[in-house]
Amino acid sequence: MDARSWSSWRRALCCVLVAVAGAAVADEKPRGLEGGEKVNVSFNLLVSWNEGATTRIAGWGPYPLRVGEAMRALGLQRFAFGADGGAEGCSSGVATLPVQTIFDQYGYALAWMADASVVEASTGHLVLSASWKRFTRGPGGEAVESAHESIPRLSLREGERALLDYAVPPANNQQRCARNYLLELTAEVMEDPVFADRQIVYDLWLVHETAGGLKETAHTQLIAGQGERVPFAFAKQKLAAVTGGAGSDQKLQVAISGHVRGRIRRDGPIELALGSERALSYVAPDGSNDGSVADAGEKNVRVQPGEGIRVELPPPSQGPTGGDARAPSMTRDLAGHSFALILTAKPVS
Amino acid sequence: MEASEILSAFVDGEAVEVGELAAVLAAPGARETLIDFLRLRTAVADDTQPSREFVQRMRRRLAGGGFERTAPRLLRLAAALVLTTLATVGAYDLVCGARPPRPDEPPKATRVIRFQPGLDWKPVEGRR
Image (cartoon, rainbow over all chains, first blue to last red; front, side, top):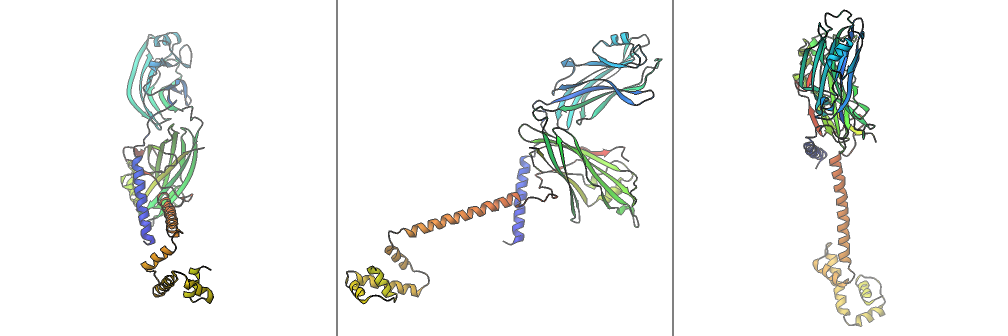
């Protein structure tokens, strides 16, 4: 057997082994919270002051909830209210008092009652249900329900927030403090105390391959705590911009960035949320550009420590899809180029 | 020197004491032993490969030493050891790729995951 056939045979056997291993772990997807993990859910009341910025003036939470638990059932439901020229001036608060009492005693202009529960939860992905009611102080001081909403499924990535309601103070208010009020919901995972102090090391490679056989790789290493989101960004690459036509000195700039978040599980694997973004822009020789067209996504997988996973970004023929006028030419210029991320994660011993 | 050694040396053309040779030849069975040695010598001279008859005769002559059984067993054990070692090294080479990747070279991926445009791969609105 000559060296070439030996090498081919070895490669083929390795491919079979990799395929078998891949099939064995193909169902390794995040399985949800475990151990002492819960979802910290918060409601916040934001205000945009008449002559100032938007700030958080009241809120309740974070309340740690398990999957299936609701604030109302645990007695954690509250009213958040905003004073707007009432007896308390420009103030706000949270109370368990009946809403009419709030309006009668303190002269507040707006109040919200809200409830939330956890439907699903895993690393990188949370599903909540939420409901809220808004009350406005009527002309005679009575509490009037002015709006309400019930959202059975609200999908959030960890750390994201959802704006639930927006309101302006009643027009009959004489001493208006704010231009508007916002009610928001936030959620994040509360770590299992067993792993709260653990760290994970991520090795991440960007692989750029061309139809002509060129292969370039870039490598970065990241260390983050259990459940901690850590961002990454690879050096921008400049490709020939054929679409610019003869004499064009523009380049197509490709910027790959993203984030990774991981959690060590009790039985050994690590749950990962790998987010990636590809931003494309045409740049002139002096570095100036006219902005970028970007696509992004996130994958959630369960891996063994040290196991390498390859996440391929969609080929140019399927994106960018943002509807930008430059998108078709960028797609043509990206033809023949593919980009992929290869990631391994291991607990820091 | 024993009788068989004197006869063997005589057949091989080596110098022997005439008196000792005469005494050996006078002993019972000496004639047959001498003829056997001559036949053996003829057989060795005619063919580089020992004949079946030669092998059987040598076994009879050397009976009791056990060498003919011990040597092949040792050889078989040694060969098995060598083959096992080679197979282990070969299997490791096949499964593990023989050498670790360079620091700037990504490891082999066990899984390939693709974003699905429109499903989990979407435009980022508002980027300029």
